[in-house]
Image 1 (cartoon, each protein chain N blue to C red):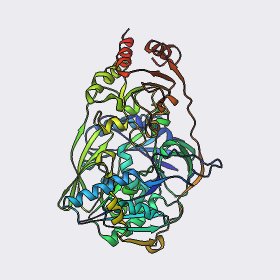
Image 2: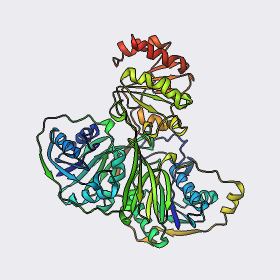
Image 3: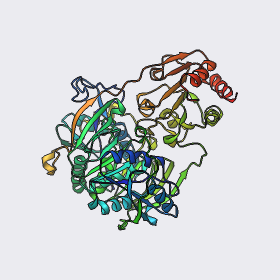
Image 4: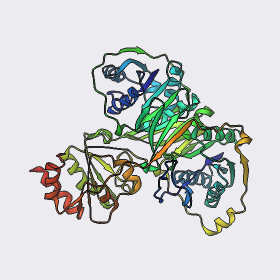
Length: 313
Length: 249
């Protein structure tokens, strides 16, 4: 059995989510090849990084303008063109692969298994349903498996490999969509999905300015990523890429600090696997306290600056 | 341009689901059911296109039990023109749903299909992408803005790093994210009017699609619980606990 792991990268560096999905791919039991598809010079560097990962036996590189902007149609066509050589296709459940993998699965007439949290056997996996309120164990009866991996539940594979790098056979771009532009926030803060510490704000923040005034200094003091509840994003207090929850990012940092977040089911779904959860909320009955290791019932506008200050010393 | 909107009947988002004690699934008896929230956003977007003169007809389709007609009625009360109910019993997986929808698309010939990005019951996030694949159409998932440009579309998508805008050659598939719009409530007169709107009754057999599940559900279990911890009295105690007890600072 041979598994094709499709690598997440930003066209410069390989992303941590690839290392985590590799752990899941290795647990399927077969050889693991990694496909790095990208648009620029950075694709090669990402491929070299993938070749060094422990447990990778081959790296395939596909470089071309069609792969530069993560468009679903050409990347799916490429993976399908490589499909005859593989029994399983694994990718991290990032927005890129949530977009692409179901397209691959349908073209292969396979029912995808989304966001697995555990490999029970090569054909059997656990996955959360109902925003993580139930865990389903499913066995795939398809000849080929198409799987996305919830990376927060798998440890990152380390280095120690020296796989050969080859060029992937090319596939025609169906030419159905074109890239127009993007608004990607450049930040020195760690990304949510790989941050060791996350500070998140909720509806109680009341404004974008308060996020900047209260949440961000605390996050920067801790070297943390910044998150937000859906309510805060919907209200325009925080950008969409900060959203933690069932339909946003699923995170599991060492420390998660929830500030002014009540703890709706869909938010808990995105952060309840964090190692230590701190909740600061003035409502002592807020559901967030039911999952918090340390709860502080306080006005965030006093407690957060005090906490930021306390960390200086 | 005709717009097709598939809608799913799911457990209402306010319901805290319970896993059955025998591990065969979650408790669905006597539980409030509603339209999948992302599908409501899809219906709303289609209606706005019609109101802006960009769409001529909004057709809603649901695949599920007889009660899914209530979900279709909800969309008709919001303003959709007519419905199609494809009766199916038991669990119909996204791949099978996409195959049925492909047949519906071939019969209806819409210029655009808008779907919710995921259903809040199985959280699969697959159907739209699969439908696009089977039809050989372009796709834009997780849309936060949709513009019609002739028979093509410009879509802004919510992605991990921020926002991405792409152009789609029509006909196309778009799946909705939370920020695309805020769905309207149906007014009482519109609820009454919706009762007279037509719903076409179909069955899976009419489309010749094999809906046998590819995934066998072996077990459904409660997630590992998380216990509430302690309340600290002030910031100093919090910092102290994080340093000494939790060891995360």
